[in-house]
Length: 96
Image (cartoon, one colour):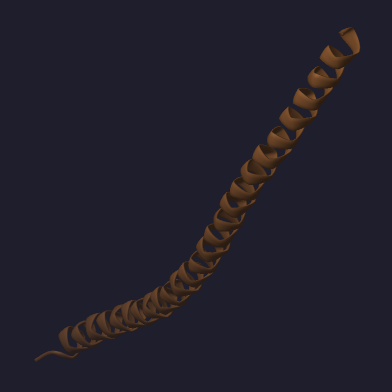
């Protein structure tokens, strides 16, 4: 095999090795990025679960508050009705 042909083959092989080294580095960088993205997604999911739990607790508190307010308003309405009844009775007594 002539020297020139051998030199060309060696040069071509060196370029291929360099290209494969670049691809290998790119693949390693892609794996690092993918691992980082996986960690980020895991963290976001954990925060989302925490936020969802907080919102659910808030909803329960609001429902309890609404129920308590309804009971309290019913009590106030009953008391006010008793006052109105007493006032009406007192007004009728004054008319006689």
